[in-house]
Length: 355
Ligand code: 2NL
Image 1 (cartoon, rainbow, N blue to C red):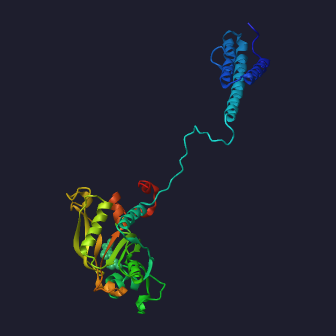
Image 2 (cartoon, rainbow, N blue to C red; image 1 turned 135 degrees about the vertical axis):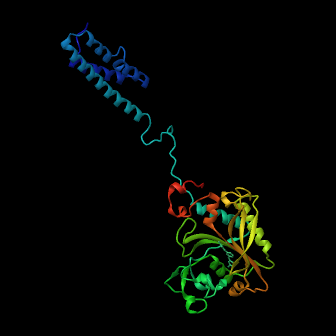
Image 3 (cartoon, helix red, strand yellow; image 1 turned 90 degrees about the horizontal axis):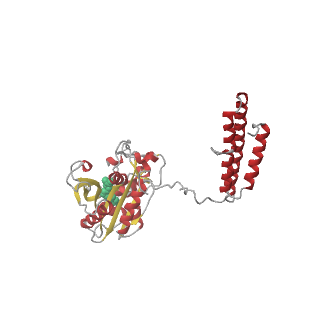
């Protein structure tokens, strides 16, 4: 048997490994070199380990130490070699096209924005133009012009958010100069009628404000889409057809609508519009609270006093108008339990909606 391994033998084996590895022409050959020194059977390290069994007792420890030293030295050199080979395999800065793609985080529209866009699209296809207006209004555009005179209860401080900044009023009356956060987008329809002659067909989406506390179904700020059509010979049938077409497009192609008599100062006659429940087709279920109907919004034929306020000939023109809440439509479409979720911007909620 050859002489037992010593420190010189360790150095010699390392040098031999380095020379063999440098001479290896391919990764496959390099692997063979590694196995020759580190493999579990018949390798240099393995044969040194085997010597321990037959060596004199006082040599066993040293042989083990040298074998482990050699093993660690070769592993270190092999790992360094593998890293170099890896880095050399592609030019630095190049993209490794074998890696899975990295998908950038995509944002999405807020569910209220999607619903509003969808509502606008439906009315736009029916020939309505989309118009927007100021959130800060004067009392004349928000109340007087809509047949709500100074004593009207809706003008109360309890219901409406007044601002400290006065504007130049329309009538010159003292209270006409107060400003407020608009309670509906009707005030913009008034502005539009002042600036345009019939025929007109517009929808006015936007944020409106009421002095309400936040709860499951109320928010002091919410979105609305109001619509207005004015022309010659426009009738209640046109209003019904328009809202039925909207309900079928927005909720269900087989939906029916019903009109319940109601009251608004700015329409006569006035009605609440209900849509047949699209979950149970009017049979009665939890969604419609067993009534078969779901309330959509309010509507009516424009009151002659409104036409007079904007200078239209109320004998010559007729028109219809409606108001629908955007959150309400979103709550119904997506079956959301709490209106506050729309305003909290918690991504766990928002990410549940389609783009
Ligand atoms: C509701 C009720 C409604 C209108 C809004 C309107 C606008 C003008 C003239 C006449 Cl300029 N009417 N808008 C009419 C009826 C009802 O909204 O409860 N909305 C959620």
